[in-house]
Image 1 (tube, rainbow, N blue to C red):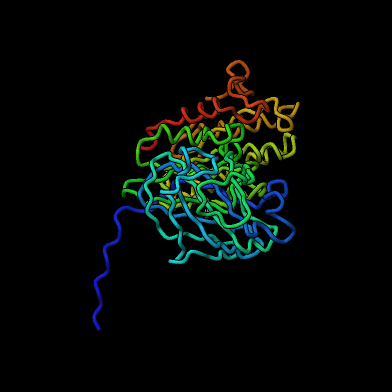
Image 2: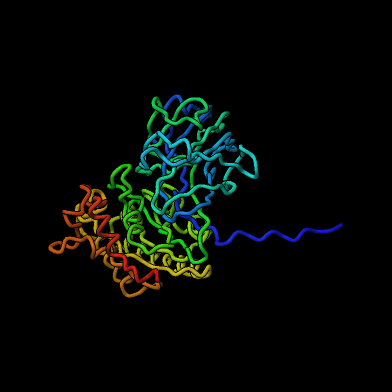
Length: 398
């Protein structure tokens, strides 16, 4: 018996170029009828979604998640393509770019409860910063009302009854501004390429940004970065560092959302405002949550450095005037200032990014600058997100 020599592995390595933090879908964010009913979701449904990659490449693979599904997820068929006009949120594709997606050589896959599946590599030229369309058909659907999604997509997806994976357009589809099932895209890249992972809440997820415009601060930051650096946005609305809320806490999801990302080299932590805002507005409670937050930041840094990541920390931005986070006695503002002073002093971080200084009102530093305020005195406008992106020194990625 003779053995053939092993074939040479492809050059380069897999690098995460896009992510969406998996979450359990809340009732208000479920697919609308007829695509969801009690105990059955997305049966005989085509789901077409667009996303903006960061790093480009010639080979890519997808990650689909059933992290919060209440039953095994039976995926019938998947394809990727480039969208019509290169635009996010459109239902049309360029048919000549469509490529079937396989899983271990098969068109279908069943994802166990709590797991995700990585597709086989496929050939498609995708430019850095390009928009990609992913179309999924579920014949039998998910036999549960517990569905994995990323509600804060700020991107329009499209639902249609039947198998329309190969359709050039879905003119009668139902639009929804959520992502379902998709959790990541990886590209095969040069050996020197690497990913910056962003751990955050709604400010990183982009609340206040423009739907289908990709003008969150992570998008704007990618536009400034040197070639060869991808950005993985692992922000989610309502997320907290210490306790579960809308999705698992930052401490609970660190392994999945940061340490398991292909090609990760840097971690930027910009999270904690929801911990302050949901803790009681008393001096004792706020001092307690500050102490717990600082310990949590140290834990995040220790765990990330064990995987050879450089860890950067960002100061917490103002929320003066925000209801209900801003309390009349100013205990939460005092706590925010204490957290920021610790971060600016270095904390456990390899570098500090002062987002607070970038967007606060110089005349009233406890508030956002009016030019950057989305209107609720907590979230930022597209101009504010651009200011955050411009506050990140590019020297951190050399």
